[in-house]
Image (cartoon, rainbow, N blue to C red; front, side):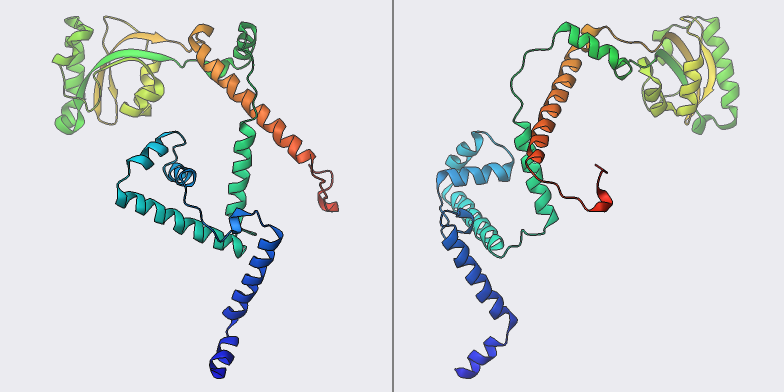
Length: 297
């Protein structure tokens, strides 16, 4: 027996457990109401509902309904998961594992930021004057890019090889001679992997289907409702284009972007309120800086 005691006493884990127990009972004595370090895990409705809410990331009454709908086995499983999580969490807190852990520190900061977000007080709606002033100040952010409207006849380089240029040129002459309309384009050429008609599309959208080189070329063309233009090369082959409309970049009327303006102003108002709350919190601390960083913030 004495040999066993001497053997145990030499193990570092023994001192760790003794020290942990001493710290635990000391903290429990000084903080009798601290539930985090309590050795009693209460399994009640509120605890289980909150557990389900955090597990499902759904903070509404659905968690309560889910709890009521569980089968006996499902309920037992939820309870066992809750007990396991609480026991591990409390033991980790008892051992001080949260100290100097940057991940936990950031999580707590995020919680404080979340609480600060809830400090925004209800305010009056924005006036038309406020919306107009904000819109004019940020006009470029709401500007609509140039767009084009066209249809095309496509010739696949894979299918036609070296004769593709000759075929495209010959077809161009025929289309213009016969005054082929916009809606008749499907009767000619090969099947294109994407769309046949492009209505009010931006250069970025055109480039995503045809490549940047062809997109730039199309946006330099002059529109004509009865004249086919080309051939224009793309990443897939040759194209004959009937460009019927070009719209320059423009600023939409305020009424068209009113909802966007209101949402953005509300977002900025909430950010401002949140920052003021955090600034007030910071003002409650005394900031001591080493000489190296004095006057740098």
